Image 1 (cartoon, rainbow, N blue to C red):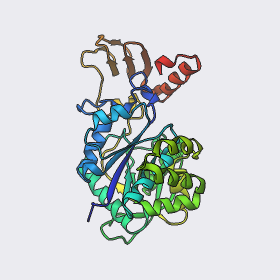
Image 2 (cartoon, rainbow, N blue to C red):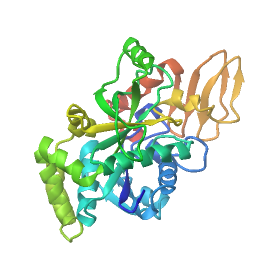
Image 3 (cartoon, rainbow, N blue to C red):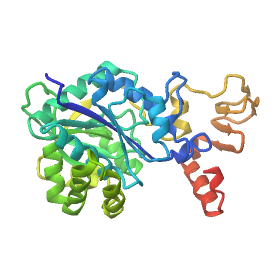
Length: 356
């Protein structure tokens, strides 16, 4: 398989509000080393992709506030696309696709989030290569994660018939994408054996991706084409400032994946490797991270971390979450880990933007 035309794009946005107060708008989770690996989540994503495609074919899409740190953390990055403001995943991925299509007609692009943890890099590479083979055959591929549990935190992908695609023996047609289900529905999905978690990984030829976009979201497509035409010229910034705010904010799932799957144009490749999106402190703890090593636990358990070196003692509380920074303290439990996102929202409403 020839990977010379394959580019990897890493959308790097969001504030990781469920990991507040560690993750902030100014230092979101993808710029942090949350696993103790000595590399941030963004750097780990880059390292994983650099084992498959050349570093100069890896690109990041991020906002102006994070661009300097992205460049600092990834000095050998192939390209940096700075979006003036968040417009969701489709404009971000579409921008990279439109620019790369002009530079290299027929290029294949794979989109992979900046904040996911995968340690089985060989397993990931096998799925990536199958997805590229599907893309070469003219379909859009997604990598579906084999469920570990009936989670309600993720969307699901239902697999259909096995496809006859050279170099992609495990690829199946996607029957449908479904939103995050309730617990009973999630359990039914896992029992069926035909559903996988939607990790937001998409691989496709740029001409196919943009062709679907032109048909399904013509206004968004036209705007991205105008920006791409000016990207490698002195008019880039002017066109960005004029056109970007007019683009439809929409996720790639809603813009392309869901409607095209109903037409039989999306395939799913199984991702039988370990995977986690570190969505909250419970997920971080599930990876074996208990926080600061000098925490004192007395008849207690959970995750406790002090960024400023303060010693934390937890007594008689199990599944606790205690996180201290130099300006904030969080105390909750694993059961309520998802609700942490409500804290920065409340702070913002109260005008405490210095803490979000």
